Image (cartoon, rainbow, N blue to C red; front, side):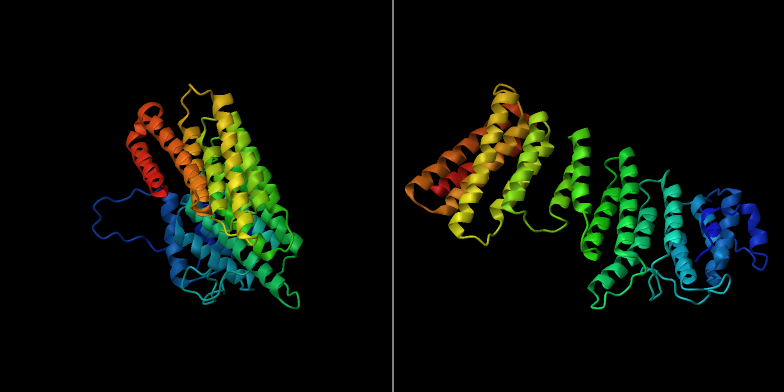
Length: 408
């Protein structure tokens, strides 16, 4: 176990000479610089010692403390983060202070062939605390987010291997312990998103945690709890596109597999409920159209006729709801490009489903009527309600008219 004092305390620059009495600092050599960077005195001292220990490849308690100071001075230094993980790996595998040279503590992104092993619970929490401390003022620092992921990867990988092993194996963490680690990480991500709901790094890391747990844990309610989490965010800010995107990710469990008809219907109704509250917001309409299009393209194990009938029923019901919102909540004489755009897309999907069903006279007539209605909506948007995108709507009108002609 790595001494926690090594990880939680930052050695002051003035203490480096006594911490490294046997080493000489290595100054930075700038050959004829056009413009010299004016580093602070503390920065110069810390990184001069870092160059020395990088050259000697010393992985010890004291070099771990040195990396903490260097990262405090510059949290974006990838080399320091990488070296810190190599030190953690060497110490976790039993290297003694000052005598871990030559051991491989790589984390898969350097020159070593051994990856960072799962850290013990106390070390993991302390290291995550360091990342949180440094990440507070640097919420979009990629190196910090990558470090958090690198700490979790060996734990999730070992848990997945143990779950797949015929004898049950051992990851060092029980399934409940792995779940606790995941929940703690999701809680931290939530605190970051509370300050910046559009932080791409945080959302990406959240998806990684959920996917990993789905692989290494046989039973977890993380997907359901995160679905509730997206509802909280969307209810707070219905224009939070990141939350809508994450809801799609969660409902699909990170897979490119269509939802079941019942799941799709439930999510469609959810989108409509939000569209009713803010019909001028494009997010619920885009979400709704995405769900409907996914169902229309999906293949079913049911009889072809039955499956196609259900798809058409879904589109027709969603289109009817969209028409109701347009008429009763928005009012026909009020411009609402987002709602009308969704109606066009739903009509387009409906015409494709009707056209695929057969070429009888009634079917052709229905396709003509549906596409004519969609083309009329596109024309109105391009000439009246959404003229800033008139060229786009003119193109859509032509496309819809052409499909109408092809159906005749």
